[in-house]
Image 1 (tube, rainbow over the protein chains, first blue to last red):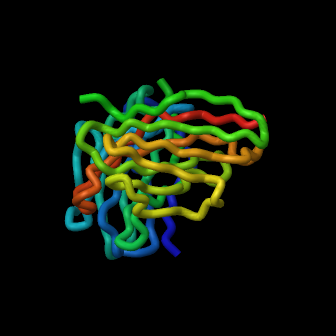
Image 2 (image 1 turned 45 degrees about the vertical axis):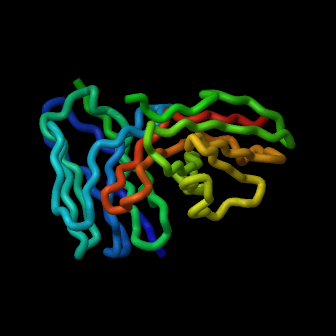
Image 3 (image 1 turned 120 degrees about the vertical axis):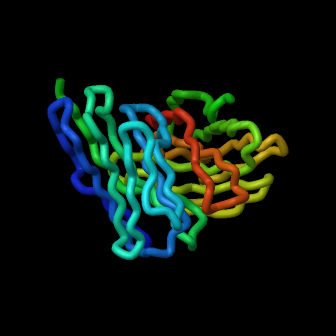
Length: 112
Length: 115
């Protein structure tokens, strides 16, 4: 079964801390993996897209890595800020299925 | 470049009624996908339309249907509404032609409440 799991479900850190969010998936036959941010009651904002042939992508303070062989991706956030508080979702586009499979998300709270 | 536009943003309907939600994708994008988000089930795929044809379908009952027009705008319809249909409905827009490079962009969603 194609599944995506995110750990932890919630995370609270002080401002300025570097942090890592984890995502695991069950099948290495993927087209790509995408990280999203969702603020309460809002839609999803795309943060980073990693194609299956890539190992990592960077955008500003964000760095996402992909290890297909182990079925894992991490999202690294440097020097966290209160404005980073949101739910972060990992989604995998498997070769079979034609759709994004989402994890349940990690709710991040950055305290001033 | 305009983003993905979903209308309306909020809806309140009564059980048994039907509802139509609209999604306008990013200009040039030909693929529109619909997702349902609930606290218990998370984000679940409903269906995808590409060039006016349904290309993929999720595991939802036939009460959920959709269509896509020649300008790539898409609508989804839910008939005979049930309390459990209360959710945030999200639309995703993508190029649809090159899956490996395809980044999905989401709208703000339509919050449907069934009473």
